[in-house]
Length: 459
Image (cartoon, rainbow, N blue to C red; front, side):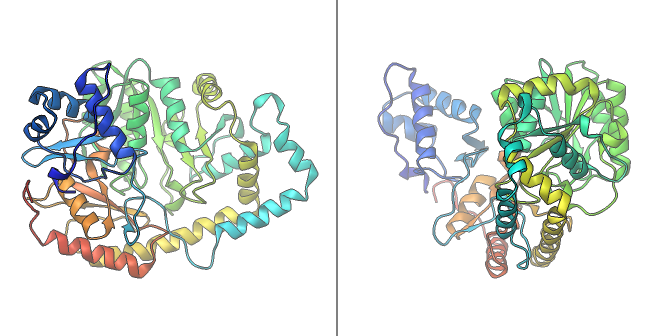
């Protein structure tokens, strides 16, 4: 949308005008009148249109930015962000590379496997009763046992009694922040999981960015941040990080575990894509078991609708985590837990994960070939990659131009921990609902865009 096309409706009465304008902006985003990458009018243009002061528009844009709705790019303007939970649904003909839905090979159909599992469950009265009449709101022992098996990695094998089920990885992040982070700061990388940003914002927890390189957070920088005494929890994504797709080497994991041990802080190891990564790297939880809560889930690895989060937590964190889970959902749905348990026990989970790994590997090979020479550093196991943008492209400009070309990408400013930071790149998902031919066309379109110049602010 060219910047001159958006005209807000009537501002609500009874509220400060800048708040009302931010509310109207939020409503137009929710209704689809504004989409990710759209450039908003300049402060002066909008002030003239509405008959308000430039300061009112500036405060409204600042309020919208605080809510995560827009982002400013120096010299380029103010753009609508996709925002956590506000991603646009693809329109007809658009190719969705903005989502993160790991692909799967054609010979494995999770929906058909689910049908078979539900059929078997329907003919098992004892199992049906167990998932409809759970005792005192507790996870069933069999479900915790399956979860302990699912989360086990190399040298990390937590006992079932240290495992808690949640309603997905996002719920796990929120519960852990609620249980362990307050009242201190949450330390993470400059570009991080937007789910963490959203949860911290809702809980009014300050997030501090720790200097990082391509291998992840820098241990010395983390030590300096923790030395302030204000950090209570460190958020790490050692495996297939979002949005970079990179995996942290063993030496960096060990150094970060040592830094966290010295600082005596909690560690939230965010690992929803861990099951897709073949290999023997120990998680940070294996190196610092008494201070690390390891989070993984089933949604990305097995099926998007099977939303089970698994938290392996040390004994000291157990009571507070259990209280946070009960306060936010009481109990993870036992029916989902039963499906998950059967898939783990009968090998269905391994079959699905293997099929996703194979499909991700093939997609990654294609993307690497097409994007060669553009600064992409993919991990063969990652279902997504980070595409850095050359000057003079801005994130909002490129996101909008890609959408005009029929390709949705995820703008980098969705992953920034602070409004003062800039993200000069976009995340690309090698998604399940995009076939190989469409993916190839989309990637070639992005390459073509990168070799053109962006339109100016009034283009």
